[in-house]
Amino acid sequence: MKSILVINGPNINRLGKREPEIYGYDTLADLEKNLVEFGDGLGYEVLCKQSNYEGQIIEWIHEAQDHGYVGVIINPGAFTHYSYAIRDAIASISIPVIEVHISNVHAREPFRHISVTAPVTKGQIVGLGFNGYELAIQALIKGGS
Image 1 (cartoon, rainbow, N blue to C red):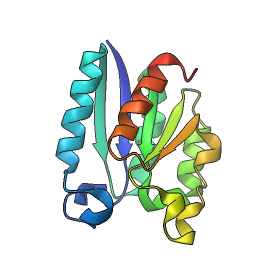
Image 2: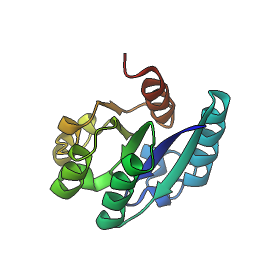
Image 3: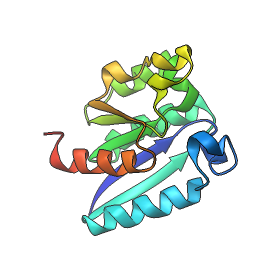
Image 4: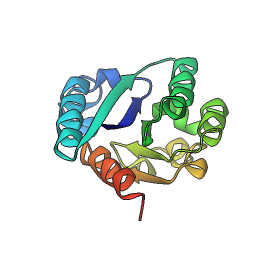
């Protein structure tokens, strides 16, 4: 079975508790369960990982290509705005990466408007809640076209 890796960055483990007026009341466990089931329905294995540590996220990005994943979906969290190390890790692999944000980062604080990671991704999906991850899975499966 072909596999897709979903990586969630810092504070995503706080879903359901952190700013529910922005992120909702569903938890990371809810998101991961939904994505695994969604992938299964399309004939793909979806593996979900979350870390608050930049180095761990970089390792997973490298491993995604080394282990033959179809692609990566990443919500880098706050690393989106300043992690050139994660940006370089994404640029270092040849499989597609799609950046996802639950909230519309472009309608929030000005510092959230800049993504250093988006320019090296296949695309960016923002503001569609958990549905953004499902759209990213579909895009990876269809090859982004």
